[in-house]
Length: 530
Image (cartoon, rainbow, N blue to C red; front, side, top):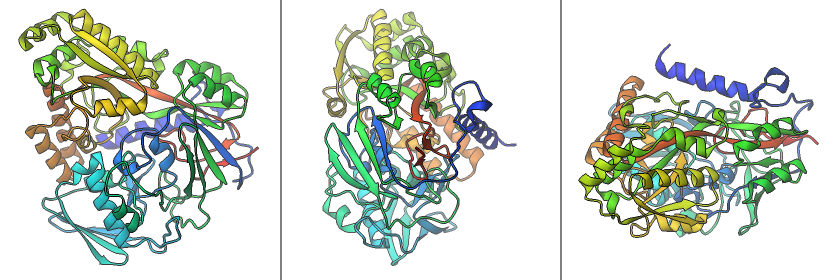
């Protein structure tokens, strides 16, 4: 069995733990045995989110919690399957030229937008041209020269350089997804963050949004599903629910209390300290989310002290990751020490360059500060208040930095202000955020020069180019190792820990595919039995 197969088996094994019946396990990552006789149509699913939305334009942001909502509304040419590999969604067929510079996609016929219009190649072309322009991930398709409309149901991509399976992966990625919308909407909304209408092809359609209160979706009665078996974000999708309401509930205690009082059916972003209590609560089921989330410290590579690599190396040297992880989450089963930039569940996970990881060496940090000529200037450390793990990790890292003599100005903000501040190179020196990258190519969006931090280098760009054209897994694995070493050597960011998320649901919420505990919320094929 090759490495990829072994790791995928590990991931599926972890997921199988999540999906067993309660009688079969003891760790709480289990689901109740369903007594339902089958799917039930109707009802309103109430979901409690942890924060509001800076924008509703999914193409233009990798920020959360937007994917939790828009995965129900929009679709792309590809979607993520159960093993997090790309699988066809709005695509019916595809062909690749021998030189891998021309890709042709046959589209599914008869697919309808929420406004009743049939999807065609014109919509695909306009949508993907907009995505390439406004998305943080658009840089990954910089070699895309032209999208040609071959026929009503066929589009052809022309690249200046060979492109491998990476293309399917980037089109399937569920953050800042390359979703398809009507041509007239894509063309009328040229700027990112300013989409004038939300119209997709998904099983649920946008209905109403009240800022800081809730967002409502309703069933799209004319949805045209695929016929192949359900497969996480793609395959056959059924909208059993009449409505889904996403409530904005910033306080975790309020989300938990609302779940127990049956005000909410699904709650997200819970502190791991609630795990044991929820496991024994009547009618409630805690769900540990996979894959693990990487918590990482980003520097301002463009302006200020951290444009000097020795300042970045100082922080890299002094960070004690275990101390950070222990401060972030209460239970050991919710965090793990792992030097890789790819999560433990990824086939690309590696200990390459691990000598730079979890050093916890204050004296070495001081040596790098001297090399940098640091004179005690304050550094601006932006902290997101609404994310408890990020909040606690930021405070711990700041204390470690202070122990080495770095003056840290912790600046606490709400999500909208935090996003705006981190995008300004004069307002930010560093911040902690989180995410997961199962494939090395996906890093290009955040580390290709566009994302706050503005890291890029000729060496990493060369690796990204090779990754884009390479199809052989073992060769891509070696390139993934090379990218990890370059990131560590150049201190693109600092790995400050991995943690698993916690969601919970009422046992009346039936999720036979186990999608709620995977990555982002995927609520098709979910029904209420109460």
